[in-house]
Length: 438
Image (cartoon, rainbow, N blue to C red; front, side):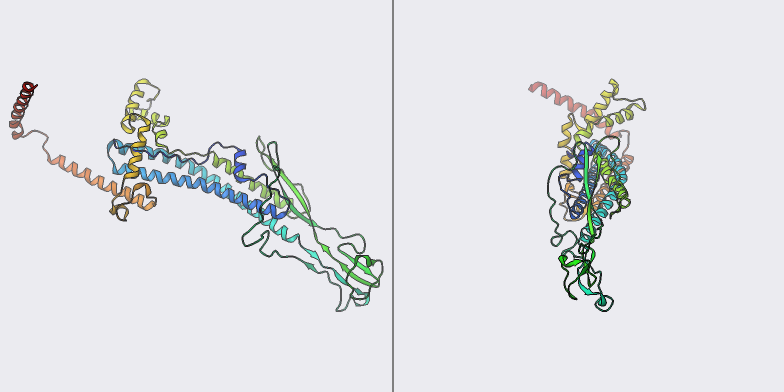
């Protein structure tokens, strides 16, 4: 048969386990010392999750293209080659359907988790900006003037990042600094920077207090001049917020791999804000594990000797009770496989695979100049058009054969009968001559 088989394996992900998924998503050596570190980190985790999901979808797409090319070949070919190509296509297709269903469920969780990661990153960027908030110092004013146009003001101030939150340039973030592993012994750990209200000072002249000074009106604040005097007053400013690290962790194996819930606190973002996001973020990691467990194999050599294929052929030959484990059935199944794919499994590589590479669908099927090879065609419409073209032309040829067979007499005519003795005589003479020459 004009065989050929795609010797390509489209493997989505294999050997699923949380450690390998963590490696795909997390950089466990990145040090999260500041809010902008955590913001950058969660942005990267979201991007890694996106790449993880995209890789799985790309492999499914590649398998679909391979299936369509095999179906084109099955419509163009006849007999064993057509059957072999169609069988391989169906084997890949059932894997695509199974994988797509699993991906549909995993993708929803993955997107929920990526959205949570992006929201956490956004929170940390806001925290990084708010950390700069201060109350400005106000010069001292005489007590008599405090209520007039020179009144004291509590004036907040913020420092806006030149390029945007956590950026050092246009779309440029500071690189995360590598250090010791965050979380060991089967644990994954990181920290959030949260902000809380800074407590005001407890004595005149300390941050966020009124300075009672003996200095002249409109004199800049000087801590050493603040005391208990009521002659002039000023505002001693300072930072409005303090920062706190909130640590979360989870086990990477075992029955409970959820993140620990943060205890109630008076920080921003609060535990009530972060805990729901962590639950959603955990879905991204779980989806990564589910995706990693999916695999598709379109290696023709492997598919041609798959146990599932042998069992199906056994039932096709001997009915419901047919089994490849039965010697008699096994012999028949092996004969069919030999006819379809060749005496050796590796023969598939030099048959269908060769056809897939060399077949050039006509210009009338896929356009162009007629020099496109099937292996280079990836457009869904062109592949569908090629299948339809070969289906229709094959159907027309079959109909012509049927018409011809109907017009051809099944019994020999008188002419045929009269010529038969002559043929026999000729054959006898030829045999006689060969005998004499031998």
